[in-house]
Length: 565
Image (tube, rainbow, N blue to C red; front, top):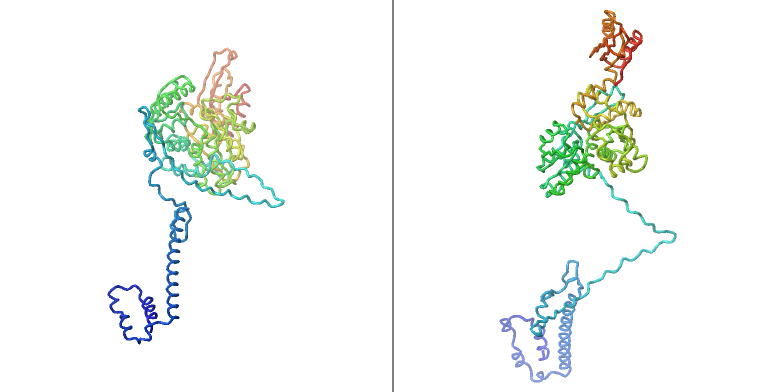
C-alpha cells in the first residue's frame, strides 16, 4: 500500500473517536520504514487522484455548510414573514410576530427634549408596524342561466314561544301549586265530558299568581331590594302582595279611600304596606306612579308582556298533561286577554287539533269588537257593571295578546249577565264552591247552549278566580235563583172575607212549594175597596215545578202578577 493510499485510508476511516482510541491505531511511519525504497515515491497518477479527492472533499464541505447557512437564514426569514413550514413553529392560527422589546407607549420616554425659554418640548416616536393581512372577499357564485336570485325575507321573531312557557313552568313550580283538573258532575246534564281546571284554589284565589310570580322572579336583584308598588284592588294586586312578601321583596299597595275594610285587612295579612289615597282608582294609580318614581319602586300593573303571559300559559301545559284525548279548552277572554293568549300558545304548540274558545261578557265584548276592526280597541260604547265585572274590564286589551288571540284562538263568543249568574249558581249546587263572574264565565257558555258542537266531546273549562265580596255574592245568588226559576215572587188580590188567605196557603201546600215570605196589605191606594194585596216569595225545586205552580195560580186567581227581579 502506498503512502497516498494509506493517508486517504486514515483520513476516511477515523470517525472522530476520542483521543484514547488514537493510540490503538497503527503508526504510518512504521509502515513507511518497512516499504521498499522504490515505492516511497508515489506515481503521478496516484498524486493526481489524491488531489482530486481532496478537492472534491473541500468542495462538498463548503457547499454543505453554505446550504445549512442558507437554510437557517430561510427559517428565520420564514418566521419574520409569518409563513409556517411543516416543521416550524405554529402561531395557533395567527401570524407569529417577534415581540417588541420596548412597548410603543413607552417610546415617548426616549424622545428628544429641547429647552426653549424654560419650556420642554417632547417629540413622540411612532412605531411603524406591518399592516394587518387583508382577507380576500368571498367570490360571488356565478348565476345559472334561467334562474333568478330572490331575497328571502327574514321571519319575524315570535313574541311568545313555547320555550318561554316551559321555562316559566320550571321556575314557578315550587311557588305555585299544580291545581286539579277534575271531572265535573255537570257533564251528564250538558251531554259532554267537562273537566274543570280549578285555578281558583290558589292562595289568593286567582290564576294571576302564575304570571305575577314569574314576573317577580325575573326582576333584577337591585330592583328586588328596592321594592315594588301596585294600585287598585284586584286579583293582580293581591297576587303581587302575596308573592312579593314570600320572596322578601318590599311591596306597597295604594288603594282608594272607599275600599272595604275587609279587603284592606286582606292585603295587610299578605304582608303588604297598604296606603289609602284618593277617591277613585285613577287617583290611586297616579299616586303610585309618583311614589315609585321618587323612591325607585317598580310600579307594576297588569299588561301583556311576554314574561307575564308565559307564566299564565303554564295552565295550558298542565291541562294537556292532566286530560288525555282533549278536544277543546274554554278560557275566559277578559281584561288584557293574557290568560287566553298564553294558554292558547301552549295548547296549540302541544296539539294544534285542540280547539281554543274564548268567552267574554256580552256587556263588554272588547275582543270581538277588536277582531271585527282587525286592531285592538281600547274602549267601546257600553257601561258594564263594575261591581260585577271589576277585573274583567279594568286592564285594556293588549296589542301582543290581541295578535296571539287572532292567530291561535278558534272561536270567541259572548255570554249574557244572566247566564253568568246561573253558572255561578251551578258551581255552588254541583261543585260546592263559590266563584266570581270571571271564574264562571266559561261554564256559562256551555249552560247557555252556545257551544252545541262540543256535544259528546272532552272539554276543559278554566275556572280562573273566586275573589268576590260576600255581599255581592249574596246578591248574585239571589238573582240567579230567580233567573233559574227556583225562587219566584208574585202579587195577588184577595177578598176581605175570612179564610181567603188560608185558601191561598192551602194551594201552595198542595203544590209542595216552600213559602219564604209573605206581605199582606189592606190599606193602600192601589188596592180596591174591601180587597187585600198579598205579596209572596216562594221557592220551588226546579223549572218544571215553577211552571206547574204558575199555571195553577193563574187559573185560580186572574189578578195574579209575577214579579221578575
